[in-house]
Structures are given as C-alpha cells and as structure tokens.
Amino acid sequence: MSYSLQLYTLRNAIQEDLPGTIRKVAEIGFTQVEPYNFVATAQELGAALRENGLSAPSGHAPLLSQDQDQIFAAAKELGITTVIEPYIPAERWQSAEDVRATAALLNEAAKKGAKYGIRVGYHNHQWELESIIEGRTALEYFADLLDPELVLEVDTYWVAVGGQDPMDILGKLGNRVKFIHIKDGPLTTDTKAQLPAGQGKVAVLDVIAAAASLEVGVVEFDDYSGDIFEGINESLSFLMASGEGIKA
Image (cartoon, rainbow, N blue to C red; front, side, top):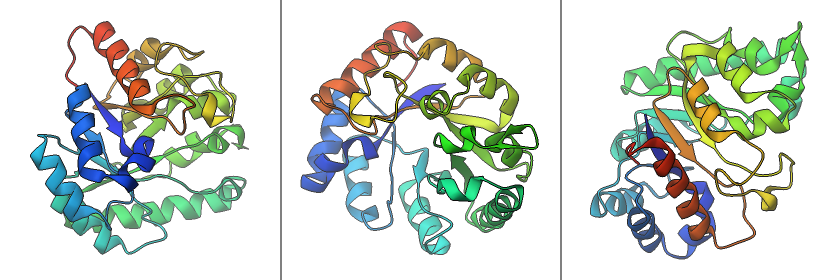
C-alpha cells in the first residue's frame, strides 16, 4: 500500500501556478497524486508530473455528466489506470430505484473504460451512509449492484460524518475497496475544521488497517483553515512515521 494526494486539496494553488504546486507536492515527499477534473489540464499537468517524477494511479472525473471518451483518453495520457466518479448528489441516494439506476450507469461506464484499459470506481460522501435502503446503507446496497470489476474509493471521513463506523463499513465492503481518502477532524460538515491525519477524531491507522485490499491511501483536505502545504506535510509525516517507510 502506498500514499497519494488528492489534488483538489490544492485547487486554489493549482489555479495560480500548476507547475509550481506540483513541484511543492514532490518536495514534501509525495510520489503519487490523484488529479481531479483533469481533462482540461491534461497536457500541463502531465508535463508537471513527468518533470517531478510523480505518477497518478487514480483520478477523479465526472463520468456520469461529461464525455466519457474524453475523460478516458485524458486519463490514458496521464497514466491514470482508475477513473473515479467523485460525486453523485444526495437526492439520488434516497430510493432503491435511483441507486439501481446509478449503478447501471457506472457499470456501462466501466465497460467503456475497459476498452481504454482503465478501471472505474466510485467515491462517497456522507449521504450514501445516512440513507438506509432495505436495512443497509445506500453505499452497501449500491456496491452489491456493481459489476465485479468496479472498485470503491471510500472516503472514511465522510463515512464517519454520515454516522457509520469506517472500520465496520470497510469490512462490509470487503475487497472492492482499493482506495480510501485519508482525512481527519471533528467529524462535522465544517470542512474548514478538518485537520492533518492523526490530529482529529478519526482512528486513522486503524481505518487503514481495516481496508484489506487497499492499493492506495489518498490524503485529502476538502478545506483547511491553516497553511494547506503545512497540513499535507503533517499528514504525510504522520503516515510515514506510523507506516515504517511505506512508499508515499
């Protein structure tokens, strides 16, 4: 298992200076990143990644609302092998019918992705855990409707905000979970209150250990009240110190 950084964390810095921001990420010690909405920036981002020796095993893109062929082509250019749908709004997680429809759309996207040699995944927020369908969380219900090749990226912070135990959910979702988002804080929807890993209410190391088939742990802040580069540095330092040299 290795660590990556979700570049959405640095969206403001990236808008001002993409190459310089990627250089800082490498200087902090990351060797992997998870780009977001990467179609528009693929050429500039790809050059910055190559220049700094970074790879992007996964990336976020709105597969269910934008051109999938463009997304998969850009992913292939960047070396991204798993494209993850990052956001489906809360109202589409309230009924079994809607969840089944979403699963069917992602299954179709995965078939298209396979033609490019790219795997498809899904990333949750809190509402997939707050909604209960047929006695289970909507996320669990959804997972059972996905074709075997689809994977999950479990945002463990939003699982807890949604009222569920991340370790329990990871156990129930099993080997489908190949990525997790690692973040910490007071377990509220106040994103500016999020904290570096190890400084909040999430049992970060226990959560990581509960993901039995984890490929990459992705550090992310949705927002942060301090210096964001210091925040990601503190998160990575905590993870590396606890992981006895696990590759970043």
